[in-house]
Length: 209
Image (cartoon, rainbow, N blue to C red):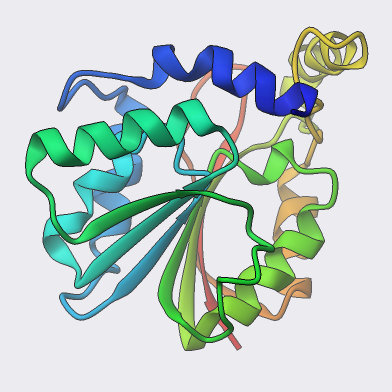
C-alpha cells in the first residue's frame, strides 16, 4: 500500500459526514453542478472519497459510479448508499486508469478536490476526455495554491508534503489550471472561485471538444 493510500485511509473517518452536513463550498459545488445534470446521464465521480457528495447527485441522473483508491473511503461510501437506499449509485476502489473504465462511457465526470493532488494532472485530464462521450462535461473544483494570495499556504503545504506528513500538492495558478484543462481538449464553459480568503478554489465546468 502506497503512502498516499495509507494517508487517505486514515482520513476516511473524517469524510463520513451526516447526511446534509456540508460546508458552504460543498453546498455551492453541489448546486452549481446539478444544473448541468440530466435524468439520462451516466456520471463518474473521480476521487469520490466517502461518497457523501456523490450520493447527492443520484436522484437526478440515470447512474453514478464513484471511484477512489482508498479502500476505507469506498467502504464508507458503499455503506452510505445502502443506508440511504440509493440503488443507482456504485462505488469501486480504483484509479482513473483502470482498464475496466471504457472510453466514451460517461456523460459527465466529476473531479472535485483531486487535480491538485495528482503527480500529472494533465494526463488525468486527457484520460477524462477519453472517457467522456462526445460533448460530455467535466466538472471540477481545484485549490489553486500558486496564486499570489495563496503562496504562503501553498509553501507550507508543499513543505509538509516533502517530509511525508501530507500528500504532495501541486500549486496551480488559476491560469495554469485553465491551460491544463483547455490543453486536454476541453472548452471551459463556466469558471468561478468558491473560496474566500488566502486560498482560491476554482470551480470549472468544461465540455469535451
